[in-house]
Image (cartoon, rainbow, N blue to C red; front, side, top):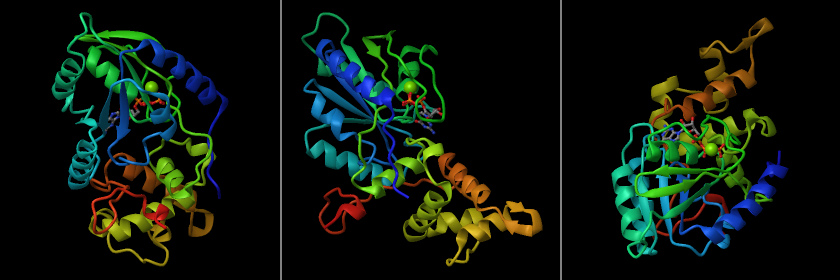
Amino acid sequence: MTIQWYPGHMTRAKRMIEEQLKIVDGVLEVVDARLPMSSRNPDLRELSTKPQIVVLTKTDLADQSKTRDWIDYWCKQGEQVVATDLLGGSGLTELRRLVDSTFPELKRPPRLLVVGIPNVGKSTLINRLTGRRGAQVGARPGVTKGQQWLTAPGMLLLDSPGILWPKFEDQEVARKLAVVASVRDEVVDQVEIAWWLLNYLQEEYGSNLAERYGELNLEDPLEAIGRRRGCLSRGGVVDFNQAAAVVLKDFRTGKLGLVTLDNFSEGGKKPCAPSSEP
Ligand SMILES: Nc1nc2c(ncn2[C@@H]2O[C@H](COP(=O)(O)OP(=O)(O)OP(=O)(O)O)[C@@H](O)[C@H]2O)c(=O)[nH]1
Ligand SMILES: [Mg+2]
């Protein structure tokens, strides 16, 4: 199945972001630490010329050593990056400090546009920084529909709807985005992405899988998980849709351990998606 998801509201949101970029002082690009590369929208990078800070969210769910590698890499590229756990609240003081030092000449609080793909935590970040629940939050993509300015100590923040790009050339990237629920579950074959995820975990984080589900039959891990978790339809046959939902929920809530889905290539510390290598 080919995954594509670029609904009309994203086209409109992109136009809105283009307009807002003209009036803001800078950008907070929100990136999911479990997908340090795949959750960065190439379109957004092209649109903006304003000073930018990358805010890595969900570090509480990501592989810490990979998070460090990616941050080192970006810093060497001259990017400003802060790692945050928006549920625990870590990284926010560092972010405020970085915002202060990025606009030293401004006599007023900087106006910052918060951008990123769906479900990465843009609205949660704004609520954290403002100390209020002014922005609506939810564990699915497409929660934020409009835009509004919100005041935080030392900055003004503008939330934006998450946007993707019109075509996923690399379906591996699309699968990863589906796994972290940045693409709507309804447009994706859940069994297929659960299979993909189980394969990836088997290769990269085998012990996490064994810890959660016990030893698995590698030929058909979803069947074994479904049976153990009681995802059965009439006649005792495993309901693969239910089993896939269990696996995806376990992953998204951190029950499969700390996992990052974007790897560095072997050898040189150069980022690349495994499937996009020549
Ligand atoms: N574990 C964890 N969850 C987080 C973190 N940040 C955000 N979330 C959760 O991620 C989900 C999405 O958060 P939102 O703030 O609505 O994301 P968004 O980027 O505004 O999403 P859209 O408006 O749909 O584009 C919510 O369930 C948040 O609680 C984090 O650092 N760690
Ligand atoms: Mg939002």
